[in-house]
Length: 315
Image (cartoon, rainbow, N blue to C red; front, side, top):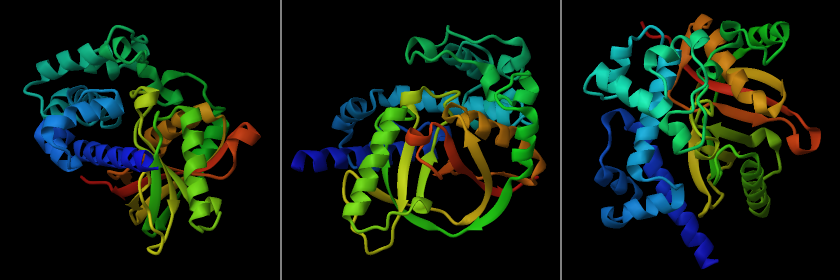
């Protein structure tokens, strides 16, 4: 039991370091700064981080910078490559383009021209993480002429998106040890649901939310961050390996989805590519949320509400 609690505490602290990196990624945080966020000694932190995540701190930061740049190139078409290079703290657009091609195997300009670029297996994302990079997967099927969904049904789903005001929710959470790997996700949910039941928390599916921090189109599956969360009140004691956080109040786009589990990411891409630009909103700095409405292990399909936190579109 002591070993389990200690391991859970290590994971909690490394998760704090990861949150710090995400919040400060454009400023290229130093090893000492990240270690301080974890409350581990800088001397030992590097080894602990690598032992738990499987990546060095520098590799992790480089990967997150490249993933953010790729998402900006796709989702912020109004920005030039130079703009995105400056936002990411690169010394020049030429250095940014060089680093981007080294990582993904294609240039930033090629990513913005998906009709004329092939899947790449020559970048670091493939050699180090084993993930072929397909630029077309980052775009709507209406752009690439692929057919992930029946076009008429997809248009109806996009027309039925609602904007709702949500109150803040305090949640207990457990992070999947292998990202979006399905077995790891199911295991994570089983653990936190069993903990909740043992803690006297009402068994209510409507109070369960998954926080999906990464885009699996640019992030290797096992490196994606996935938090299984259950809403709680202040009276519930929470200890390692579980932790607490708050899902913030605000405006959320809410979209219903029912279909293949391996197409959920494509559905989110359609929301970002087609619904958001016409909505008058832009996505806030918070990960997408999935509220599952069924047990996909039993049913063979996923039924869920997808939530995207919104803010007013800035000029």
